[in-house]
Every structure is written in structure tokens, then in C-alpha cells.
Length: 273
Image 1 (cartoon, helix red, strand yellow):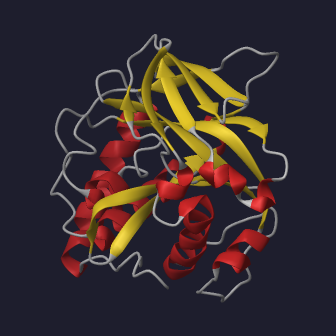
Image 2 (image 1 turned 90 degrees about the vertical axis):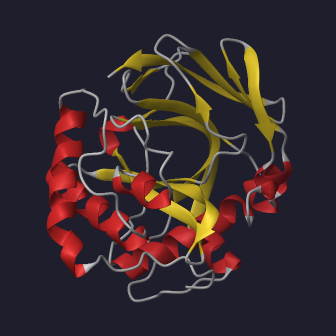
Image 3 (image 1 turned 90 degrees about the horizontal axis):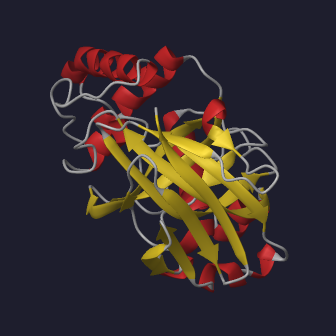
């Protein structure tokens, strides 16, 4: 690991609690109901948070179609990024020009994020635990524009630190895959101006180059973090590389549009889970 972004190990006395918290989150997601309070003792560190996440992934029993990468702010034990799974049934692409309906937990937390989505073309080699930027980039075969829908049954998911965010799938509930970016390997997309609009109003602007070491750096982090956790990444999976313009709260009925370089855009509408 090159950036101190390890997943950590769960505390021995937290493993049972992690199972109980994971079961509560999975049940709430399956039943589309809110959890007004965190369903247990807060994870003390990222290791405990990932212990909950791993238990919840096992309980969900669904295929993972990608991984979201988010920023840890402020850094925790040297970690500046976190990761969470994106399940296949939550990944959609706009069809026939129509904006897809993306679900949030209406009494929980809901947000939309403009993101660059990296497509894994070659699975990371087994046993490899460290990557240079160029090695990470070589495993990517496409970059698309997109929107991540962040949502959790727990409304305070982002208010209690990164271990709590990590514990409920990194606060992810969907991904909208937009169009591919031509010539992405020249890295110019990292300096594109990006904006996210909610109901036609600009909610935030930014550039990927300002996010730590950028979108490719997010892929590098993910390859190393998954190797440390013993999770195998697959060709065909997506990497949602981070919120370029920030995390913007949304409500049911909102119309979302992410614009990239004034030349590309992707949209969705927000629905209740």
C-alpha cells in the first residue's frame, strides 16, 4: 500500500457486533425502510467499518458490479480514501435518451454525485499488492461520465466519521453509466470542468485533478485496498472514482444532471426506494 490506505483489521471484540449491524442494514435496505438510529455501537476505526461491510456483502448475496471510492476527510490513520460495493442491480445506463429513476431511502440519507467511472478491462494480477499510477491505468480500458447515487437507511451515515460511512456499503445505492470519453488516456479529462445540477440549478462545480491524485489515483487505491482485504476484482467491473463537485443532498422527485466539459452530460431522476 503506497498511501497508508489500508483497510485495517476488525477488533476481536467487535466481530459479533459487526454481524448484528450488518444484518440490520441489510434488512432495512431489503424492506426500503429507514434506520433513525445507528443499529449498534459505532465502529471505532476503518477495520471495524469494513468488518460490517464485509458481513453485509455476504448477507446480501448479490453480484458486485463495481466499487465506489470516496474521500476520507479528515484522513484517518493515514487513510485518505474509502471503498464500498455497487451491486449489479443498482447499475443502469440511460436508454433512448430517457433519464433513469434512481432510488434513495426517503427517510434516510440521499445524495447525488458527478463522477468519472472507470471500467476495469483487465483483472488485477493475483498477489499484487502495490501499484504505480501507470500500472493501475493499464488495467482500465474505458472512462465514462456518470452519476453516483449515495443513499443509506441511516440518515446520519456521513455525520459520524468514515468508519460509519464505510459500514453501510460506503453509502452507495446506485450508479448511472453515461457515455464513454474519447481519448481518455491523454488524461485531459482530469482537468475538465464538471458541474452537477439539481432541478436545473447548479449545486456544485469542480475538477477531478483537485481530488487527491485524481480519478486514476482512485483506481490505484482500489486495487491496493482490495488486495489488502482479500477481495478479487474482475474485468468488467466499474470504479466510481469520487465526487468531483461534492456530495449534494437530494430528495424524491429531484431531476439530476451532471455536465462534463460542456460537451457531455448524464441525467437521472430521484425516486423512493
